[in-house]
Image (cartoon, rainbow, N blue to C red; front, side, top):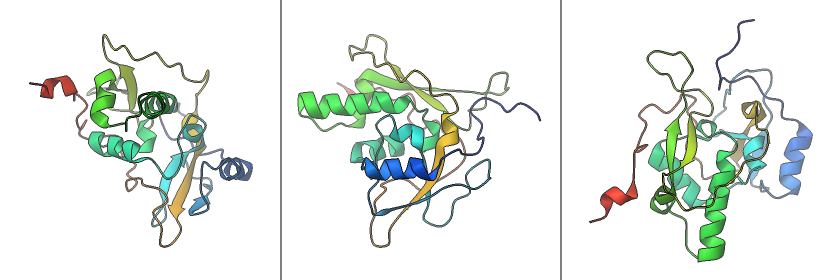
Length: 199
């Protein structure tokens, strides 16, 4: 079998016990319907489903997604699979700092004051092709005084933790964009710097 490029889909190892843990720890509400993947290597969604990752939930993600996180995804044209697992440690720390210590609502311009995105490409590809999973990393800006956040020790093969969710009828219990399997296509606002908008 040929070796897959870094960041490829490789199927899912999620178990029923994993889904029960998410419910018992209230990371997923009763208004969210979960479905484990079968033997498919990459997601094949049914109507209304989104693709989420156990590894993201282990690092601070929850459903429904916050308004800040949804705005973050929309502003940069991202999907959950574009963000590696430890990106959620950084995003959770930023949100906790603003809400818990400063008493402010987190916003994309406030986040972009301290961080920016760096695209991740398949080594040796010409032209450069972004990875299918983990297409972008969150990087501190040069001179950023936001404390450095260390992710959990290992998050290799995090993309093998995907499963499907959808809202129960009559609810939006997800607050996530419609699923698209492609890597980011336009690098939308990747170079955004809020300092550029200051007079």
